[in-house]
Amino acid sequence: MQRVAEASVSVDGTTVGSIQRGLLVFVGVATDDNEQDAQALGDKVANLRCFEDAEGLINLSVKDTGGSILAIAQFTLLADCRKGRRPSLIDAARPEKAIPLYEAVIRHLREHHIPVATGEFGAHMDVALTNDGPVTLLLDTKKVF
Image (cartoon, rainbow, N blue to C red; front, side, top):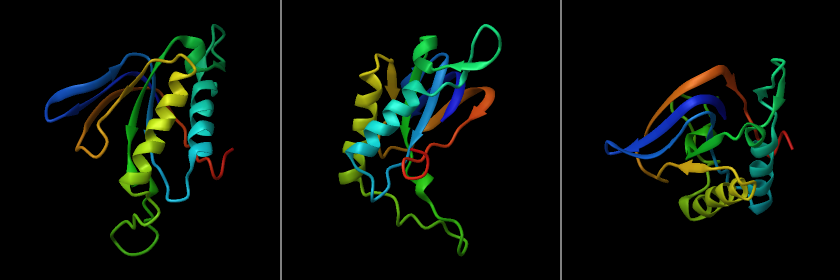
C-alpha cells in the first residue's frame, strides 16, 4: 500500500475510481488465502498508523484522518522472480477464488466506514498517483499478522 495525496484508476480512458488523500492499496490474492486473510488485511489497512499527527509523528490511521482508499486487484504481487527471466505466477489465485476475496477485503474496509474506490478486476488499468512521503508498506497476512 502507498500513502497518496491523490490517486485514480482508468480503464479504456474512463476513470473508474479516484480518491484524494488516503491509501492506494494493491491487493494480491494467493492460492492459500481465505476469508480470515481478507478480514485481517482489511482491519490492518484501516487501522495501521501511517499518517502524521499535528506533531509530525506517524500516529494516525487512514480512518483517523478521514482519508479514502483506492483498492486495486494486482495478481502480479504474487510473482516469484527468483528463477529464470519470466515471473512465475503459480502462487496467484485464479479469478474464481481471487474475486470473492478481493471483494471481501473491500467489504471489510467499508465496515470501518472508510470510503473505498476500486479498479476493475481483470481489466488493463492505468493507475495514476501522487505519492505522499513516499510511504510504501508491504502487508502479507502470512508473514505480518
